[in-house]
Amino acid sequence: MKISFVQLPLIGFFACEFIYPFLSYLTNTSFANLCCDLVVILLLILVSLDNFNKIKFTPWVIVFICLGLFYVTGRMMPQYHDVMYSTYNIWDMVFSPRKGIIILVLISLINDPKEIFGALRISAIFVWLAYTLRSLSGVGLSELNGSNHAYGYGFLFVTIVYTIVFLKEHKLIYLSIIAVSFFQVILYASRTAFISYMVFWVLYLLFYENDKNLRLKKTLYVIGGFFLVLILTSNFFVNLFSDLVEEMGISSKIIDAFISGENQLDGGRERTYLLASTLLKENPWGLGVFWDRFYCEYGYVHNFFYEVMIDFGWLVGGTLLLVLVRNIILILKSDDKQWKILFMLFFSLSMIRLTLSYSFWYDTNFWAMIAILLGYRYSLKEKKKNEKIVQKGGKIRNVK
Image (cartoon, rainbow, N blue to C red; front, side, top):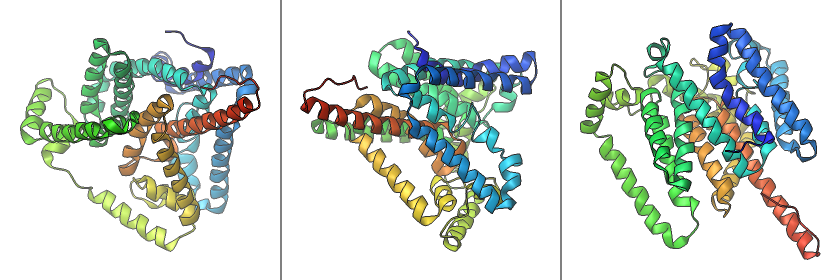
């Protein structure tokens, strides 16, 4: 597979997941982190200089606006200082070269959906190798059995990427990668990861093709798939699978949750949501970024919508959510399958998880989804611009 120069920062971003444990073992964690950070930064600088005339500045504007928000909030809310720069250090969690918002810039550097997916396809191999080797190491299984969501979502990333590859190329080797990766999702991830994969299939079946004649057929597929999931998650099959993995000496958080019947929100989340609802009513203009790290007993609010609304207030937060929903509807209704499938990938990886857990500020998949939405909007503007040029009898540029 041919790799272009502009893909290197994005591939390097994911490849560091594979490189880091080796460097950490040979040296120490601080040096390993520094080396991996420098790899991504240097690749970003080199590609940016080489393609300076093609750089899209909107992603950079978003990054600097976010930096400004943290600076202003820190000055206005000095009580947030410890959670911003110590407990949940923004330089490690939000603005790290290998996590969070930086992927917005890395994806926007490429801006060609075909090349973006090509980079992700290669990156998925590094992610799979990284997490598989760690899970099989002496440290891996003892630490990760049924407890580490990062591993589960790493394997889910691989699963969905190679599901897309299989749907395009129909090779059995990719089906085997999907099966192995999804088995690892079941072992290490929470139920939200399982649901996320189902959501990807729902989006694919309902929106990938815009042929209205197939809508009924696709809807029946979704309904059939739903009932298949109900059957496979019945007590008989769940207990059967649980016995199988226990014989292998490992455990699964998803299976344990199904067996124990934990189908409702735990008490901690209920208390957090009640607190968030009260704070939102009392503070309609918001409490500033990272408010939940200061107020919530479990570090963050565990809900994307509460987080946005209380970060920015009813007016700004509500506007941002409406803009997001509008762009999601726009891309799902579009005929551009290349951008659409990338959106489905990152929407499935991020939004289900963010609805019940985690934080959008340091969710790499969320910022990747925003990059895809920006890339699609840019492609629409370029097409409209080229249509005007054609009408005037000029020559157009190739638009991806």
